[in-house]
Image (tube, rainbow, N blue to C red; front, top):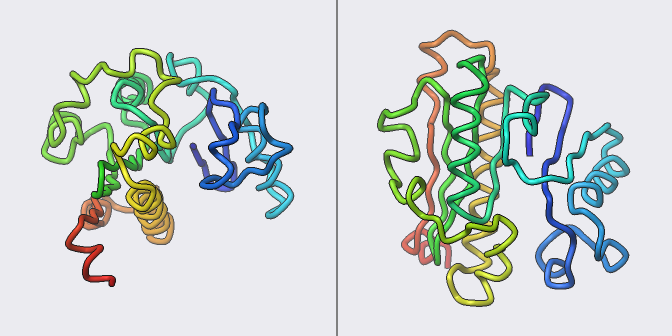
Length: 205
């Protein structure tokens, strides 16, 4: 999902399945429809905003050439994640783009802010998690959905939803502080990562 000021765009090549109904904002009539289109209709009806949709996977620069500023990244596998970072690094030329990456494992959840100028630094998620560049288990980006991972025990639904909430929190922080136009010293003062792990879960009980 990508957002620029008041314009919202959704990119997703997936279609709605029955297993999505219990965890995502879809209903039975949406089954078989593209997720981006089904979600756009709901958001437009709820908030009265115009949403652009692309029913494709992010696999080349043309997919993202019309979008900039803030990219909210929520993908199922490292192959897709690495591709987005590659496109951002090569296509945006440090032109104010911000990536907010939501990720989780079995019980832990993380959301990170990434700027192209941070490539190769300690703030680059690929430096913190080298498996992003070498994990090719998802050769087909349509496989290994979050729902399937929850069913197989690779991740919990709670961790999955927490990653999304952490990402929205970072997005709100970025927008509220007007980071897109702030001085560099102010931009660098924001938290670049939020994390929750099992110790946090226990503290909430």
